[in-house]
Amino acid sequence: MNLFLALLLIAAMIATVVALVRGIIIFLKTTEADLNGTGPSTPGLRANKMMQARILFQGIALVIIALILMLASGGS
Image 1: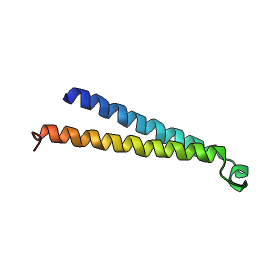
Image 2: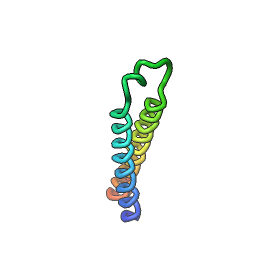
Image 3: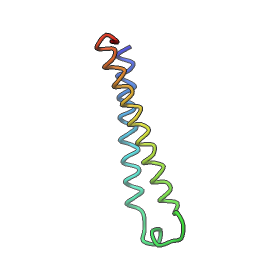
Image 4: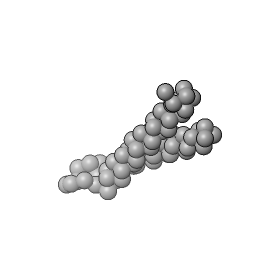
């Protein structure tokens, strides 16, 4: 069970890093025209989605860490 949770934790951490890097790349590709336009731009919406995904993956990783710590302490 611990091996399964460890693998899930590694997958969640990798997903967090991928979402972070993709979000930063999208932020860097944002042009001045995107910033000065009316309403939300497509790159801005995409960057927000990536950052939301990053937060989701971080939350999942924290839950997995809590499960691992509970199992390691005997569940008490």
